Image (cartoon, rainbow, N blue to C red; front, side, top):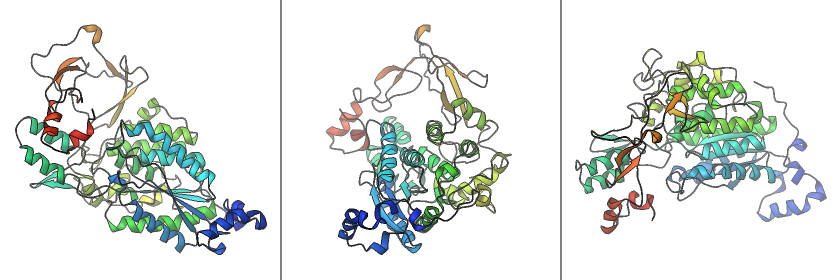
Length: 476
């Protein structure tokens, strides 16, 4: 861990705004206008709480209350908290895709802390693109920062069967089309698959990136594995508020933590989690902000030999709530600690190795031992005429569904992808397939697809007066 010398009050960044006597008249008078006293903020660390709360982002619906927990911690440690709202990127409600706005959030985060009189920041987020967006902005601003993840929702259930929030619509939508469940039963599932606030309850992009934020050193130990409604999340938010004040005094910045070894750790943990392939995109972007050279080929080399140990949907059988009770991210890292650089710095002032010391796996079915992995590898980088610059394939990817009698398009339309590790994947071919909602036939590359233009099923829902996800997800 880098040694941080405690700064004097006049060395705080906010002191440039508020500590200049008569020259601070304009700014201080406006702070007094808010009802604050000079003694509350002059010469004390001013802590920005960057909050991505939104009524339209159910992943973050509870972050207003979580910000209050952070404020309690900041005040308890002698700091001065100020809450600053930032763009909220709901994966479900932002169209056409939240990925278009990740860099906007990064720029907003960077400029919020750069232009305001703040000494450090607590970042509140969780939904897929929010985590990398917040971290990218904090890295570029390079002021002391802690990330407080929103947490994931609890497991849904329907007639005794547990539901994954990301997969229930796909799974039961197909059963509805096949006539295996009724429309009324489908609506029951829709009402129970996402029972609480929080991010998706499987190992999708949200849980992957919050875990990697912790591995990189941005979160307090174990914070990324806690359900959104668990009281531990509130206590960790309070502790984050206390800790960020100490980081402000010590000037512990992202640049003090983010080394090449830290990104190697993140890649290895992503593999062991069976994490989202989107992590490759975000890790490369984060590394670029931190001045660390990282490419797809580098990631491919980093994950080799790291098996998938988290038996969590979609790679495995269980959900994130089970992962939490099995020991969470600290327990998983303890399984692969021989693949990690344990001397990397983290926000709590300890090394990664110190943070996972004593971690135990409480359910070996959920977090597998190295000798009984879910899969031998998690990710592979592929190149070919479809993606000459490379793409990432996940071990959890399903094989293309092909029906009997399917005819391939002419050879000029065929696509092939080859692994950078020398092995060739099966050739993908353009084939006849159908929209999984309405059955309309179309040509697509080896998988069913969804289209607003073709969806007779969508129109049937609208004609019945249903305000379902299908109607809202496919405008036009």
